Image (cartoon, rainbow, N blue to C red):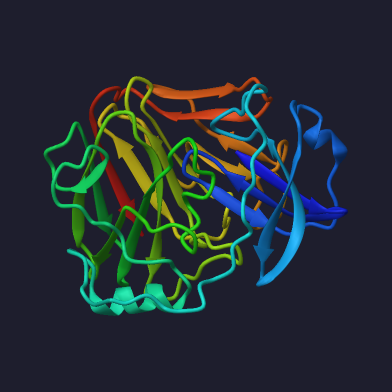
Length: 303
């Protein structure tokens, strides 16, 4: 999903996919990008960088979820970092004090929920229908940040506006955590490396993203659209499909380090057994690794 917000001229374009969002300021907008929009446009008053302004926001479809013409346009707030750092007392299970303090200093809204029992969505443990294993294969500490992308929430991956479902410390090479994810849950993840990864100016983790949806059409992919220079990851599904920095991965078509507008990105090398690559009704690529409907094992190796 993409929000186009402008005041006379375009102020910013916000892109949010199943678990991905990228935000870039641009000087103008090709009017063809908003031709598919149907329905009334709305003016609403929002706070942007502590100064009120009138922003007109309309949705433009982007991968992997297509916006339907009968939906109403809605507002996405261009959020600025919180003015106060959040507290690390008490710490949630699995998150170190050092990682929590760093998350607070870069403008994240809060620690993860880090549920340790079945909450019907995402929790720490291996007793759910879908088991995701995240492994630190780098030579630096990693903090896993994972969120749930509710279909009504276009800001789910903006960590200055939403608290993650999971924030978990993987301090050394070989550290791992298993998460359970219920069926019918879309979401995504990114990682903070060596307490140096920052948020983008709009509040997303500035790194490689993983995106998933569980249930009847369970799909997973890697996305480099927020930061083409992000840290590598390899995603292996129990069905045999692999998504990594070259396979079943969303990539910018040009030399830009970030992208997201229609026609600026592709789903690369997503073919073969249990890999799906198609073009949606909006003309944008969609797909990823499948073959794990209603339950499967996913291994994510972060290097």
